[in-house]
Amino acid sequence: MTPPRKLYVKSFGCQMNVYDSHRMADMLAPEGFAETVHLGDADLIILNTCHIREKAADKVYSELGRVGALKSAAAREGRRVTIAVAGCVAQAEGEEIVRRAPVVDLVLGPQSYHRLPELLARAEREGAVVDTEFPVEDKFDVLKAPSREAIRARGVSAFVTVQEGCDKFCTFCVVPYTRGAEVSRPVMKIVAEVERLADAGVREVTLIGQNVNAYHGEGPDGASWTLGRLLERVADVPGIARLRYTTSHPCDMDASLIAAHRDLPGLMPYLHLPVQSGSDYVLKRMNRRHTRAAYLEAIARMRTAQPKMAFSSDFIVGFPGEREEDFRATLSLVDEVGYANAFSFKYSPRPGTPAADMPNQIPEAVKSERLQRLQAALNRHQAAFNAQCRGRTFDVLFEKPGRYPGQIVGRSPYLQPVQVMGPKTTIGHIAAVKVTEIGANSLFGALEESAAGVEPMLMEA
Ligand code: SF4
Image (cartoon, rainbow, N blue to C red; front, side, top):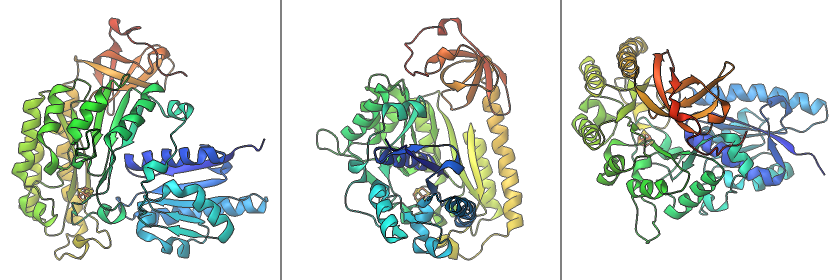
């Protein structure tokens, strides 16, 4: 029997890329590839790239320098290493990648990874291959299901892509160009995937999409279902105790989604709802299609439906034309919502997007100063949110052993890491924890007595 070839996948960026990396590994498993965590052992290296952060393409080229050196060293020992670049930088750069980095054998966009085996075979026969088409076939129909072993190795919490692409065209964002138009998967195909995950021991599923709450997949009745209806159906899958979804757009917070937060105990009371700016002037220039008031109204409706709700968000400071008064509007929105967590960045132009060519680009020093002020406010709110967790009892889904002997780590409903001393057999369980200490990045606490043995062990070591 030929030994399995080794596959090393490095995933950059968002959860959608993590999910895509898993699905690429699933696609290659029947071709005789086994995943390795050691780059130096790999026969096939896939860089699954992200275009969101600043200088994304530069980072990929510098990473290619490193893996290219490995490829040359392997060649000197008579071993062939194949290098593939996937994801959004691959989609945006295309042929340019092979031109600048001839070590690359294959460039494939996010809509092509179900063709990996065929594309690799072509690259071996013909030399470098670039595939950044948006194919007509449904990649989800072609993708291979993960094995039970692969699911178990990935842990008790899993991502499931339900929607891809975006039709919103925010003026700063490349996603509509790299991921294409919005597409939603049919309800029952998602349910089948969740059932398979639950059957292998997954307890928590996060439904993901670039614009997940614009979900409009075909239901079993032939009608178009909303995300709220989909969540209700997925909540019925035996074994699934927790549900989350990300990333949402404020314009798509419809009544069914709000009702789902009211009615589904398994739907976590935590929502990532990017706002980007608190100023209507900037929101309009960003083409966000919502106002500050509409955003705050969505938050208020959520809080009325589910009083335990907490929120996280994304912010961009120094968008072209942002005045001090606009920035202050962002600070006041932060105070009004009181976020539990947030991601904030300085605006940086993405080639090909309308904002990159807008006049009134903001000087770097101003952006840095505003980012500091914003992050100080966000940190203050995060610390206040964490502080009020002290003394409270949360259900925690335990995911893995901690850093110290006897310690185990899980997540609260608000995604905070929670560390306790407890038996390893609690991993894979949801158990009640009383929070006793607040750390910089984690909560610390003790298992409540009733936690021992409350649920059957689903994950095997
Ligand atoms: S809604 Fe999100 S993914 Fe779509 S264009 Fe705007 S920022 Fe990008």
